[in-house]
Amino acid sequence: MIKYINKDSFTKYLEQTKGGEAQIWLYNPTLEKFILRVTFPENNHNVLYIIALGSEYVCGNFSWQDANVMINSQIANNGEELNIIFDQKGGFQLRCNAGVIMATGNVTDDIPW
Image 1: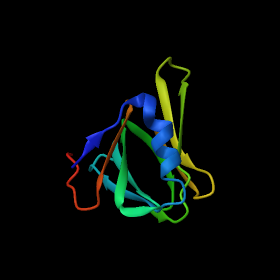
Image 2: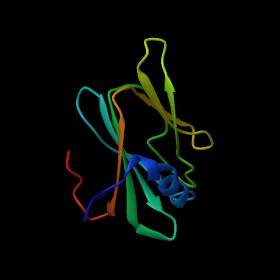
Image 3: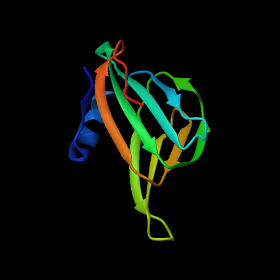
Image 4: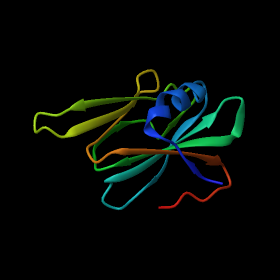
């Protein structure tokens, strides 16, 4: 069952997935919406979905092991919040300007798109 996560708990869940496998899971045809899926290392049937809205830039691998995904939020020059989802060691970066949503679930769950 999919469970959405309060923004205050994002860091806690990202820490729990450290060392898991990360992969680009879904994206829409305009590439403005991406879902990154990260497995929990102690139980790879449980996953964290990171949903990026208003994606502007993506660079890096489609999937990688030993993930250490982080999110950095900052204010852009135009005054909008810019979220940067990245894994420096994994060679991945995704920038989005319309927010980030996180959810947990099982690998067999369907994530609402």
